[in-house]
Amino acid sequence: MSRFLQLHLLTSYPPANLNRDDLGRPKTAMMGNVQRLRVSSQSLKRAWRMSEPFQSKMEGNMGTRTKRMGEDWLKRLKDGGIAEKKALGWITKILSKFGAVEKDLPLTKQLVHYAPEEIQAVETLLDTLIAENRPPEDDELTLLRNRLRVADVALFGRMLADAPSFNKEAAAQVAHAISVHGVTVEDDFFTAVDDLNQAAEETGSGHMGVIEFGAGLFYQYVCINMDLLYKNLDYDRQLTEQTVTALMEVVATVAPTGKQNSFGSRAYASYILAESGTRQPRSLSVAYLKPVVGQNVLDEAIKNLNETRNSMDRVYGPASEKQCIVNAAHGKGSLQELLAFASAAVPSGEG
Amino acid sequence: MDFLLFRLYAPLSAWGVTAVGENRHVQAHPSRSALLGLMAAALGLTREEKTAQQQLDSELGFAIALERAGTHLSDYHTAQAPKAKDIKKGRPASRYHELTAAPRHELTTILSKRDYRQDMVARVAVWNRSSQPDYSLKRLLEALEHPVFTLYLGRKSCPPSLPLEGRVVTAVTLREALTTASFNNDCLDGLALSREDWTLYWESDSKVTSGIDPQQTFSRRDQPLEWNRRLFGMRQEHRANLAQGRA
Image (cartoon, rainbow over all chains, first blue to last red; front, side):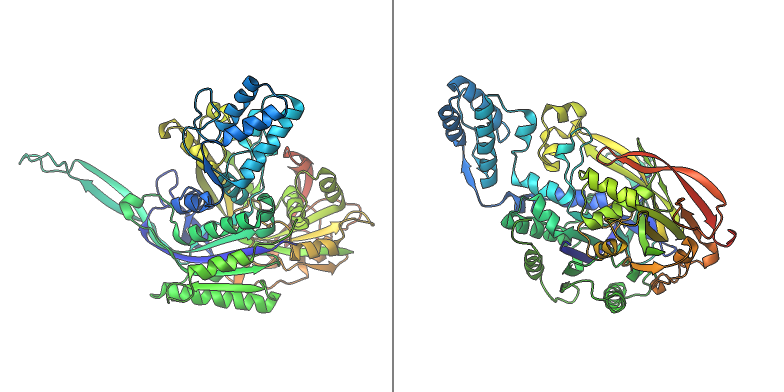
């Protein structure tokens, strides 16, 4: 049994081309026999993990900022009976994973931010090196690097066919975002005028083209396996909280970057329903199997989402123990409440 | 005989077939490997737990009623990546590091075509091949109800969009097990097909009477051989249309 944090979001994008296929058209899918706009799971995840808020949230404020960490480590090796020159070589190799290293000195050129667990990991590695009297190997060095790596890989997983020991099962499941209403992809015929072309006889455009686009209110579903996330982060409660809240924030506010300069279609989620519980998770996409029609798409979509959840709970029994609703369309709830809700879903204790 | 019965529906599902390169094809009905994976996920077995995975594999038989095959979707998928030689130099710590370590123009793009089925609906019957199983139907049912790992329909981005509504049923034949029970499919109104149009898929097992003659028997490469290497062997699967297959 695991605790699952499920997020159902409604996010409205004005005309945009967020996620394109091989012909440059917005991606689509058929649902309930009606064509919908689609933003792929992969596209969403990339936008989130590469986004500035996610990066900065995960950098964290804890730990030590120094150029001189190598001095401690060098001493540890020497105390362990490793000759100075050999030890310095090993330390340089380790330090180079954190930043540029001064020549022949155990110092980094810049201040490096070390998280406590990184220091711990290096010290463990040093002890191994002393015991086995050998230089560090490349794979060992990779595992040292920082909190960001831990959070990123813990959430979205990693699979390396040639190095299974690096594999990590993703704790976050992200569905393709699908518009709640039917959509016809439209095309924008455009021309670009040559600025320097002033000749009276040559009045045509310098370039013609077509961009296809669509506007949609998207239903988005994310399911986070909190126990797995906690495990992937080595049972560090504080780091798990930091990771899950960083994810909440970007899921609610970061848009895919596709064609943003042409469409400026950045959007925040209008409605978020979060659920926490141990029962078998399910998406609520059936709320939109019949496409929403009419002029009040957002309110209808919110209504359908809640009606579907309630009727499913009636039929199958409650799917979750706790819920949190942020309704930005009507100014109810807040992102802060959602973050607190997510933090409360972090497990405690070992395994 | 007892069967564990449950229903699978999602707007997108992806039951993969052999895929070694850029094209990731799928079939409409679940593969044995995917169903074993679904059970293992519910139970919390990791790919590394080879003995347990083999045990699970040896104990379970599957049959499927494909209520609606759904329609085909081909997703054009790009992924940015550093060149192989840059990865070998030292494994980048995270996706962010991987993409920012080298200058942007040195990144390459990996293309793939990932297929999906849209609006597939299927029901699955599971039975125990042995009489003293470690993984009893009751245990599987409890695991599905409170899974350890997230469940999905073939690909992780395909979460179930209705509860699986699992239950243990008693039936004489596979056909009876698959076709008698009803699920809360009201919300799938527009999608539901009449029972005559269902297609049944099953594997032979001396313990089970199918209750329907196969119209076709084919080989499918979905018998797990090695879990962490994702190595699969061939398996015989029978198929019959419910309206045409004689009882």
